[in-house]
Amino acid sequence: MTINKLIVIFLLSFLQLRLVAQRTDFDFYSPENRLKFANYLYSTNDFLRTLDEYKTYLKSSYNDTALFKYADCFFNMERYEEAAATFKSLFFNSSLEDKAKLKFYLSNFLTGKFDDFRKLAQYEVYQPEVYRDKVKLLSAISYLYEGRKVEDTTAFFEVFPDSNKAEVKSLYYLKLNPPFKSELQAGLLSAIIPGAGKIYTGNISDGITSFIVTGLTAYLSVSAFQHNHKFRGYLFAGIAAAFYAGNVYGSVASANIYNAKISIEIAKKIKFYFHSRNYYLPDLTIK
Image (cartoon, rainbow, N blue to C red; front, side):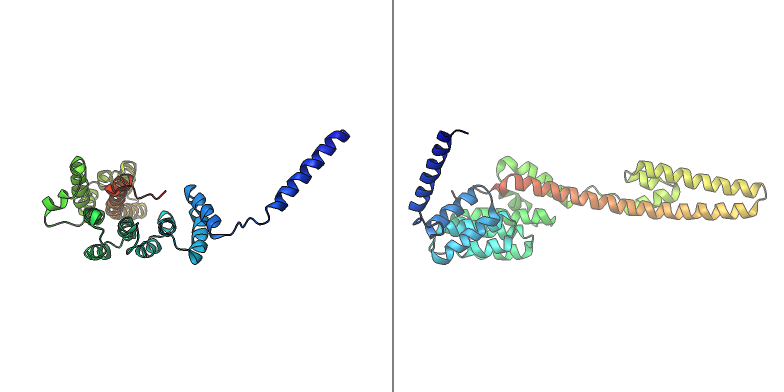
């Protein structure tokens, strides 16, 4: 490296140090700058760090938008009870009152405590007038999530958008009458024909295996008795009886497992359907 290059590097470094020294009066931790940084973190979905920045800022300053975003961080982190409590602090004398109220209801809905949510939805003082129909919609969706039968289906489906009524009806009746397999029928089928109950519940390979093993041990038992081998006859008879009893019990268990899977799949289907459509709610994002 030549001497000229060294001089240039030295001068540039000196100038940089001078510039930094001139800006020592810049307060990175002032409320204004902390708010800017919090807003930046919020825009990048870095909600954990955003929480700390907004929390510190709000200790010294009040800002409706910052408080709403602070609550929204809890919401996006699925800390719904904390989100609801924070949104509630914006209920009165706030420019974001209506949005905060709707987010409050959505947060309570997403806790999964649907009985408590429906009781809360009856308090009109909490309900935003412009979004009152949306609160009623969330109440209707809560019945779908639980699979509870409603008394007036006409009024129930009326709260949903016309373009989606057919799909919602399909989900409602699917949740109410899922395509379960009868545990009794599965057990009876396997009692008549070993393995038939498992085939009935979709476990075809297990059903065929049960049929072959039970049939084979029973055949070996009969064959042993025919050839006057009583010990082997009783041995294979005991094994065959054990396989037979296990086959019946296994078929009942198979139906139970099948039904549990169906329940989980339906619940996931309903949750995905409404979540992907944001529960038919308006965009409540604050810029």
